[in-house]
Amino acid sequence: MRKRTTKSGITTYQVIVEEESSFANGKRKRYYKTIQGGKKQAEKVMRDMIHELETRTFVKDNRITVRDFMHQWLEIYVKNQLSPTTVQHYIDQTEKYIIPQFGDTCLQQLKNIDIQKWVFSLQKASPRTGKPLSPKTIKNIMLNLSAAMKKAVMLELIPKNPCDDLTLPKLEHYQPEMYSMEEVETLLQCARNTALYLPLMIEICLGLRRGELLALRWHHVDFQTGCLTVEENLVTVNNQTITKAPKTQSGRREIQIPGTLLRLLKNTKEERHAGQNDYIVCQEDGSPYKSDSFSMKFRRFLKANDLKHIRFHDLRHINATIMLSLGISPKVAQERLGHSSYQITMDIYSHVLKKVEQEAADKLDAALFEQNPA
Image 1 (cartoon, rainbow, N blue to C red):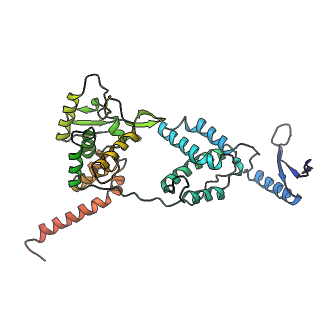
Image 2 (cartoon, rainbow, N blue to C red):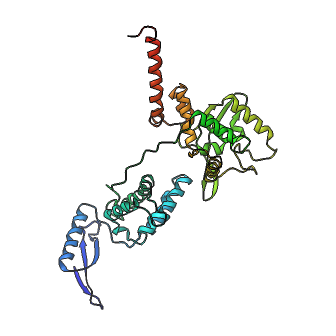
């Protein structure tokens, strides 16, 4: 341990700890830490270093900042392993939230308590937007940061993940807005003779995900068998539209098309100009929609026609609700919707099943006891 005094009068101690010989020639590794403070503090640092070496939790001093490490992590590990959309989400969260908060912090100085305080602050109204972040957004940011810190631990840059054991806000269970059959009819009536009529008909009849709908091309429709093949998902990355395969095998599926929709598709195909882009749902010039632009178009349509606000994705839930309410098997609904498991269908649409079960009980009661009441 060496005591030093700078020209400005600041006292520092350089703590030196030698590890037992780990080389064939008998040389020992030396580890250094320089601190400001008194001798007792330096002695404590030395004891901690010895303990960390013995328990293999010691990490060398380094000056890398959270900003530099996050950028390295994104470039080396994230971009080469994840899908373009996931990569873009990680980059957006890092640049918008993590770096403005911790970018200049030394990686080794990033503490659990600082991250926890930040989590609590994110739950309060933002000065910029006047609203707090949603629990889901906060969770996604922390998953991002935690994944990066896990890699930092593996690289022996920090001894433990500072994101472990954080208290996160409870996720809100989203209850989709539902339309009655009368509201669905009104929606379609308002959309008739507009560019939204075809995509709304497809969505209400088939319950596709937004990206699946926007990725549809004419070769996906078999007019002979009345079958639609879902095998692509259109997403927007860096303001560019790209198509990718579904995340799961169940996402790739074949769906039988109701007769009315099949006739609408056939008529639309015949009316399209030759040489126009192959996309079924497209803009006037035949180019595909960007996901957010399409959702915005739908919101404006609802507002212009004074219809109840719903998300476009809620039409997928409405399709499932109609199927289950009509007594269609939940297993069939699962396959048509492309859910990866039967349980997902059950969990999401349990409220519909309760209604169906009550109707079944009423029918059973009428069949058994209408003529001969107990």
